[in-house]
Length: 454
Image (cartoon, rainbow, N blue to C red):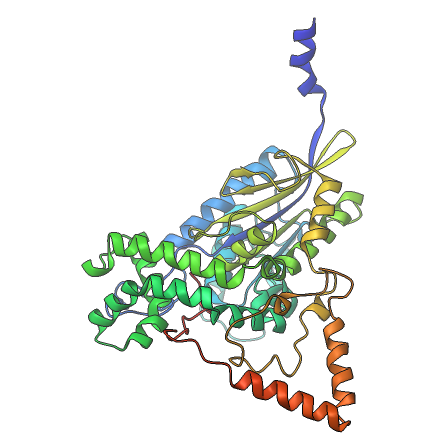
C-alpha cells in the first residue's frame, strides 16, 4: 500500500507555471572588429552582425519554447496575444536580430493575423501608388503578411537597455569601480603573467606591445567567431594559444567586473530587482503578462550569474540562455533557474526548486537597496586614473550597511571646514603626501578594451 501511495503522490501534485523570464545572449555573429583574416566574403553582413548561423540558433530556441510553453504547458496562447509577452533588447543589430529570429520560432509563419472581411481586403492599402498592387494583394489573400507571418514588438527603451542589461553603461559608480579594478595591482599582475599572449600579437602584427594589449579582446573575439563558423585562423593563434587566451580573458573579465563581491552586486542588481518585482506581480495573478524575454550580450548573462554568486569565470557560448520560472505546486510557490537547459541550484535554496520567499530574501541580500544613491559618483571620483590601487573603502556601497553613503556627508563637512585655515593646510598636506607616493613599476599599458564583449 505504501508503495502505491508513493507512486500516486506525484500525480496528486498540481504543478502550474505562472511566469517565465528568459535572458539570452546573441547568436553567432561576425567579429566586432575585423582582423587581417576577416573580410566581407566571410561576413557579408559586416562587422558585429548576426550571421545566418546565429539566426538559426535563435529560431530553434524559439521553436523549443513554443513546444514547452504553448503546446505542452499552455502558458502562452497558440496565437500571439500582445499582453502575454514582453520583449526587451539592447540597442544593437545583433541582439535585435537575435530576438526577431527567436520570436519567429515561437510564433512561426502561419500563426499571424488575417484581415477580417472583404471591406478590409479592399481598403487595406497605403496612400501611395504601389506598382503591381493588385497582384500583391491577390497573392496575400486575407493574410496581413505573406504566409501569415507574426510581427512582435521589441522594446529598446533606455531603462531596459541600460539599467537591466548593461549596467556598466548606466551606473557611473560601477563604471568607475571597474576602471579602478582595471588598473589595480592584481589585475596588472594577471596581465604580466600572460604577456606571452600579447608578444605573439606584437610579432604577428608588427605593432607595439601597448597596442597588442589593447587589441587583444577584439582579436580573441575574431578567433571565437571564425572557429565557431568553421573558418581557418592563423596557426600562431590556434591550438594552445586560443585555449590559453580564452582562459586568461575569462579570468580577466571576472576580476575586473565581479571581484570583489561588491562589483557583482552592482552588475546584476538592476535586473534582479526587476525580476523580483515581476515575480511578485505574477504571484498575485494580477497581470496578463506571462513571459518576459531579454535579448542581451555575453556580459548580460555573466552579470546575473555573478550577482547570484554562481560561477561567472567563463565565456557563455553564442545563444546562451538563462530561464527563470515561477511555478506553483498546490499552494506552494517555487522558483527554478536553468542555464542552457541545465538545472542550477540557487545559493541558500538547497535544491533546484527554490521556495519563493527564500528566493526573494536572497535577492534582497544580493541587490543594492537604492541604485540611484549607489550609482552616484562624486566629482573627485570622476577623475579616473588618479587611483592606481583601490582600497577596500572604494568598494563600499549603499546596501552593505545603513551607512553606505556617509562618506559623501564627510566630504561635505570637509568642504565646509575648508574655510578654516587649519583645514586648508591639512588638506594640502594630505594632497602632497598622496602626490609623492611612488608609482608602481612594471605596470603594462592597462588598456585592455573592457567595453567590448568577450
